[in-house]
Image 1 (spheres, rainbow, N blue to C red):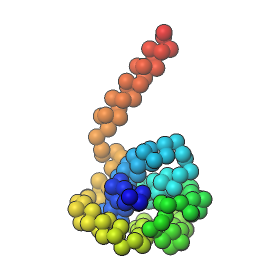
Image 2 (cartoon, helix red, strand yellow; image 1 turned 90 degrees about the vertical axis):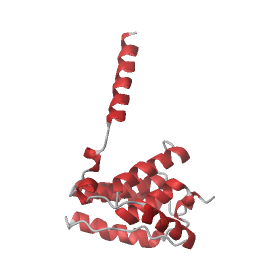
Image 3 (cartoon, rainbow, N blue to C red; image 1 turned 180 degrees about the vertical axis):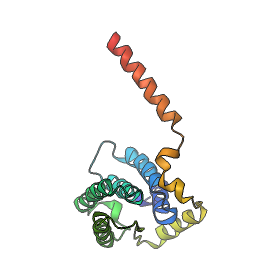
Length: 171
């Protein structure tokens, strides 16, 4: 199976091109990246995560954060232009679109969507099927998802790690 047909990459494309759930894009692709190349900060999957993060910040009008992370995504994609993670993506078009959007961000213009230009017909179909099965989300939820999600598992893990650290320090 080609890596772009991995279910998590398909989910990423569906969230990105479909309901624009950039927060969820970050979540699913970070999981995929950790499977494939954990710790490799310049991996092309990290660039996709950065792109989604930049779009999320822009929609929230965090122009400085959006510009910074979009620049990192551009650098990552240019560095990895021969990566198999761009085999079925029109990378040249994506870079042009990203640069155009970066200029809009820097000018503090209103958010506009961006699409991942998928070139492989079968991948297009699979992503479209996933988009059709993915619910549309309330704009308020999409805008503030990082604050509205259930974080109890994350908080519990942090507390457990703090206790372990304190126990080690006291030992």
